[in-house]
Structures are given as C-alpha cells and as structure tokens.
Length: 332
Image 1 (cartoon, rainbow, N blue to C red):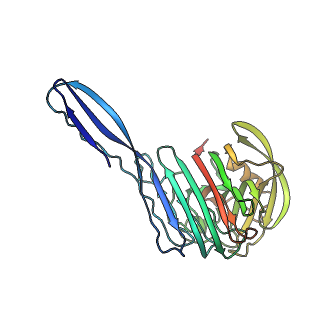
Image 2: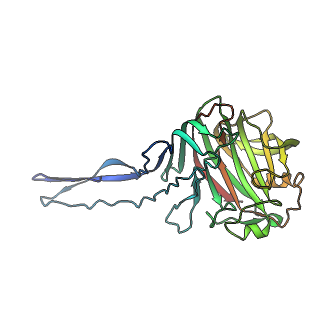
C-alpha cells in the first residue's frame, strides 16, 4: 500500500511518499493440491520527496503505475500470456508455462516477470509427473505467433523466407538450479510454415511445415530423429563472436503432429549462463540444405526461447530454476 505522511513543524514540512516498483508474479500449485492462486505483488520503497519552509501543510498525492496483470491458464498446455510494454497496444511478447505433455503432478512452479528489468524468472519443483516423457513442457518467452495462436506479439513477423529481413536475437540466460537426473535443454524454437498456415491464425501445422530448434545446452536429452550433418555458424557468447559448431538433427514427420523437425545442437560446447546473440537467418539458410521442401515461399512466424524439460530418467521429478533478461529481437 502506498502511504502518505505529513509532518507539520513550525518551520519545516517534510512530505514522504511511497513509490511503486512493479513486478508481475505468477504462481500455480499442482492440480492435486486443492488451492491455487494468482498473486500480483508490488514492491514498495519509500522516498523522501522535499523540504519546504512553509507553516502550511503540503499535501502530495501519490501516483500509482498501471501494472499489467498476467493471466494464468490452468490447463497443462498453457495459452500465451501477452506482456505490454511502453504503453503499446500490441503485445511486446508472450509468456507461456506450456506444460503441453504433462497430465498430472505434485508440487508447484512459479513464473515471475519484472517489467522494470525485463527479467523472466522460472522455477519448477515437481514430483510424480505423469506421464514420464522425454519432454513434458517448455516454459518460454517469444515474439510473433505460434501456428496455434490467433494474434502476433511484436511487429516483425511473419517473414517470407525468400526475402527475409535479417534480425538479431539477444538475451542473458542464467541457469541457477538443475536436477542432474531430469531431461533438459536450453533452446529456441520457431515455425517455418506454408502460406495457408501462416495466414490462417489458429491453424495447427502439419505435414509440409517445419519446426526449427537452436539448442545451447542439453542434459540427458537429444533432438528427435537422427543426426544428418554438421554446420558452423557464428554466434556471440559473452559478447565474443564465436564460430560455433552445431550438429544437425532431423525427423521427417514427428509422430505428435506430422511436421518436419530440424534441430541445431552444440557440438562440444554449451552455454548455461551469460550473454548470447545470433542471427536466426543464418540457421534458416543452413536449414535449406537439410529441409525436405523448397521453403522460399514459406513464412517464419515467430522466435521462441525457453527450456524443454522431461521426466523419463528422473522417476517423475522436475527441479530447475532459471532467469532470462533483456530478451530482444532486433531488425538489422
């Protein structure tokens, strides 16, 4: 609560005003726990405003900032939560818990987004996750629109592959806790789809479309399909340009949707903490050598970043925490 104190003395009046610092807090308990809550918290600091030589009481009306509220979806496959920054009427990006492949669990997870620092913090502490899968979920942040979504975040997508505008993805990642037994990766995900999918919001991808992933780290997990090649692509790691070697993995038709899957996985290196930046265009150019289709007239609809997690080797437990800050997608 903001507080206003007025202290009158014969010569000096001191006015103290509470100043709001905003943070968005998202918390959910497991469906096996009877109570769940959505809490929006406000961190308060107190600032000494002014001293005036006046014997008349001075009143200052405190102002409150508009705090955007996250919407929590209780289904295991969460719908996107828009985040509006700088008074924009278009979402700057979407957040999603995205437990698309978990039906039941015990425990809790939290997702905290601070609009002042552009930091997203994620923490999972789950047991008895069912079913046991190599991938149960993918908590994430993204710009654009997944094929299943009905509207875009940001203003750079969709992009036609044949005449794409180069752009840079950049962020700071900090993996703070990780159970060594779970299946886990740090990775980007994106969709390269046919025009009829790109311009039909809410239409699921299928045979003829492509999912692309760019991994930075993995534990007890490998991409779907088989390794079909190797490429070298320059990326920035902690502000140093590195010619990074990636394995290329491919599955022609994934059994959970029918689309083609192509992933770029680090070969002999990893990033779990620090600054990362790269041009997605370079990965899409490399993908042309492995895709089963001519993608010139296809469209890139989004670029996502998050962590896939699974429980196949952890006996149903999932325990990890990470933060991502200053996530930007910038046209070059």
